[in-house]
Image (cartoon, rainbow, N blue to C red; front, side, top):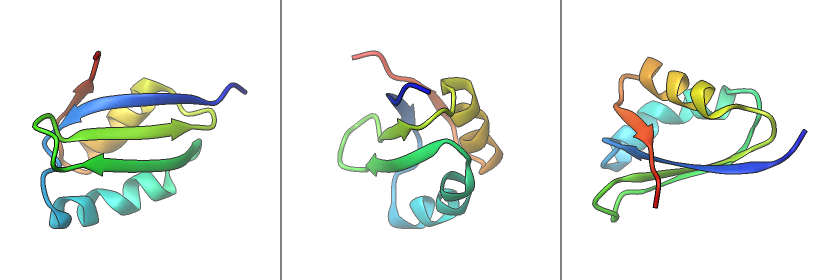
Length: 73
C-alpha cells in the first residue's frame, strides 16, 4: 500500500479541539502520523497515510464533530 500525505482545511483551532479529535485520529487504521497547524488561517490538518483514504479521514474528523474539506494548495 502506497504511503500518501493529505492536507485538509478544518475548524480545529485550539489545543482543546486537538484533544477532542486526537482519539479519533489516533485510533483510525491507516494513519501513521497527523498534525494540525493551528497557526495557519486554514487550520491545516496534515495526515500521513498508511492505507487510509482521503474520504475516510474526512469521515473520521466529521464524526469527532469538526468541519473538514480537502485542501488544494
